[in-house]
Length: 304
Image (cartoon, rainbow, N blue to C red; front, side):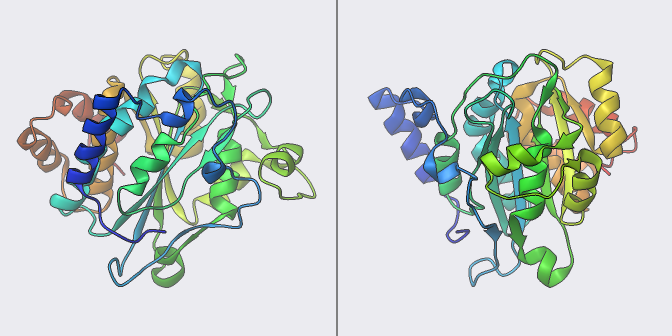
């Protein structure tokens, strides 16, 4: 995984074919499936890898995991529709030369049939294929919590990154949601969903500390979710992640927000330059991204 290069022409051709044949970009969900696609099933997965290659000698991993419970339906569509914009900003503007992107989905392990779905790190159009395999279950338990901590556990213990192992630098992990995590990683859920046998439960703060050795972790709160405006949500995630919590008042701007957050963190741009790049592409997300990143950085024009 992770070989090849992204082609907007291939993406556009696939989009035209789907439009002509009446197919959805999320074919697995539209097929009537009720379980995780085999390619995204975390059970028994030893590791998802982001490795260097001749094509990509200094790979940089990006994991984008989004809540697919009932209130977050616009986010996967925005990611799929604007995937070329995300890659365009990262590559053409030089924010990152060799990105590899993993997409995944988060539900509620207490009640959902697909509480965790994890794709592969990809550098070509297979990342779009992985999005199409995600089951948009739309469930959730209705208690203002989803299993974000289970996703953190998988990413901390079942991913391998050459950037970290060879060069001592972290990858990027973006979690997009509108609820709280559970207070602990439940060992019984891990056994059932991932296949690991834990001797005891793990506190969410503990697994997050482990995860942050390998990843810069961000939590994006898009407007329109059931709990997006709840101050308890903001306090919870800021207690865990500090300034790496981003409130976004336009969910359709999630790709641009991720791209500029990375550009800022890589010190490839300052905020004004990044917003200028958005204007050059004709993006309608400039104002929303500006508000989101200015707020998250405390007005300093830096994402961290």
